[in-house]
View 1 (cartoon, rainbow, N blue to C red):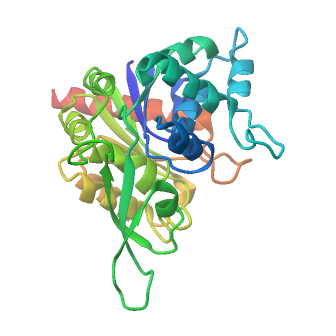
View 2: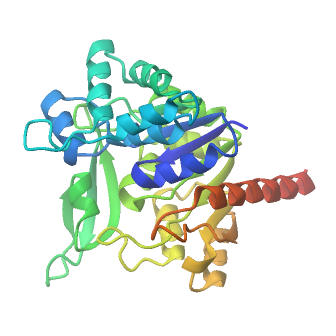
Length: 322
């Protein structure tokens, strides 16, 4: 099965770790709007794609045999101390060097995946750094909606994010252009996965790149949304599981999905989520996918089992329709 997972950060890491248990043919399409931490520093200083989320995806797909896990560990290692390297991850610096030497982020990521033993592929959703802009309510007593710019600012706002837009600061008109290889991966996929992750800053941005949005709407692949276990402070504080789907539909009304995977223990009213999923053309699938030992994290084995169950159910349903 050719699987494509779209997202960023820890959420995409969870999906990729689970998908590795389902198929060796996994492609990650990663957001490139990060402007904080080590990634933000490298982006500002060198004008390159922020490497952090790309690094996390590579580490998630790294082989556990033949020393791959050691390289994945080194890739994720952050320098301590008080000098210029403090806070930088080794993988971020290596990717930045490859970006500069090769001049092509896709070629650089392909070289990096060979180094750490990745059987799948990691691609940026755009080959240019992007900027998130959000309309946020509740920041003042006058009820006005304010514009907040930057991924970190949006992710940590104390207000209520209502809508986001995505811009390419270095491109005339600011309209983001999709990575051609990412478009080809979506077009050739058997299954496409969205979520979990920071909803407004890691998941929804993929739907705001016009070419990528159209590819996701057109693809004949099975489309599965994986929901977060808990709302995220600031970004989705107070959101119910069904509210996540409502926001998804608002940003991409033409998108239809086949299944929505949710943790049974994280859904207060399953019937409401089932109705919201039906609005996207999907069936809600409830499983025990939370890691009992790590709060707020998905268990990769349980999530992989739920993915298999979803694929089997969709296959049977589509077979009956055929």
